[in-house]
Image 1: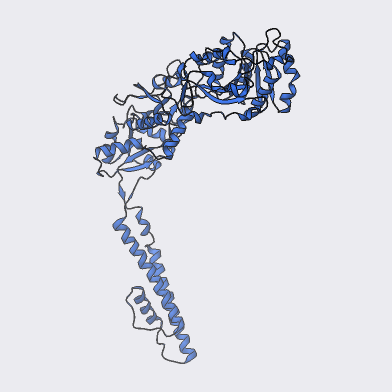
Image 2: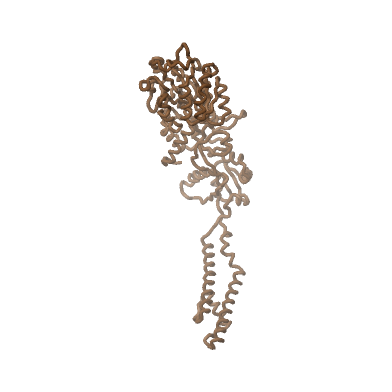
Length: 589
């Protein structure tokens, strides 16, 4: 393609509009005299806008720069004739780096070939690709690189005649409408075949050529610049799959449980209630349903590759693994995760044995120290009462204060024993002593009443934490050949490791057996909270027939999410639809 100042002006305006200051100019003829001189003579266009650019002649050179660059870049490809193979290779490179590369394809009148190439490529719904169709007259054959020849831009030709076969290409989508004529998206009459027609490109399904989507952004002209165009469709705005399938995979709900070596799987069996999520996803994204069933979640084989469900997820055969996965480091190394759907925790279930040792806290003050304190307080009050009376008799010379030490002791014993007295205090000091005695008596008897109440009503279990269970003589067990056993065996926690070792000889065949054994006493059963509660409801026929204590194991509290491929193009759309489900409080978890 012959470069000129108008094309370079458009490129710099587009890059500035995208607010990404790094770009790569890819043109097989950039090393030729005319194209190199054009870029060199217009360096100020890039410098004025603060842009950093690199000129490459091969796809390998551009791919190497994109691999080394950690920041987002814009790749600008000037499409020439007979470069369909190179364009297909470049599409594959861009598809692998969809979140790091914005691809601008500048084409002339051979846009039909470009469309056919991109349809056959493996770009997906998260692709950031824009095609800029040059609406001007094709360059003059006699001097294709003479950018000073004004006739290159002023000759008016019917652009539609140059590509009159575009209406026979496979159907594509623009919004909710299906079109067959690409040129209908470009308003040629209004702009007199000048400027560039901008079309955003992506595919709903990577392996389906019929899912090719073109989004009309408008026309860029030299006078009004790129600001007259429409905004790009973000990945969140592409939440319309036009009835193309969203493929999920999960275990067969009717199959028997099998041991898995996947430590980040939350539950042993597939929950059919999870299909409610899939129904909502397909409705939100306007997609069709497509399910794949697997016997197992999968594990790593001798070659280090995942098998079964996880293998299909890593290869891209499914878009979403509709299983509950725990977000732990082992899981992040294997797959990607959606937003959290709930919290998961393992618990220990046992039959509590009531004990009175915790309520003896009320009895502990009632010892010899309390008795001595009561007698000492009574003696002190009696002495104070006798002294006040002696002082009153001496200084006032009256015989109306007959209380001595013996009478005072008798009065004090009557007050403390709540027997009362016919004596009425006449001095202010007597009144103060009486109030102190009554307050002390009230405190003693209220404490005694609290102790009696605790003896009659309060019962506390001996075991309330995981550490207390490990220090007790209880047997500990878990379900044999289950996901819980895999979790205990692979986790790095001292308490959980002790549970695994102690329960190796006391484990059971299923959750129901473990809960029934725990209900008999002397046995602690380790299981996932959701599975254990569901099993407990089933064996009790949804009635509270068993008084089983649940001890929370805080170290096992983790977030639970669905599984996606690490670089899944549908991850953001699934998160968007799941967020809408929770916000609208639709369905149940």
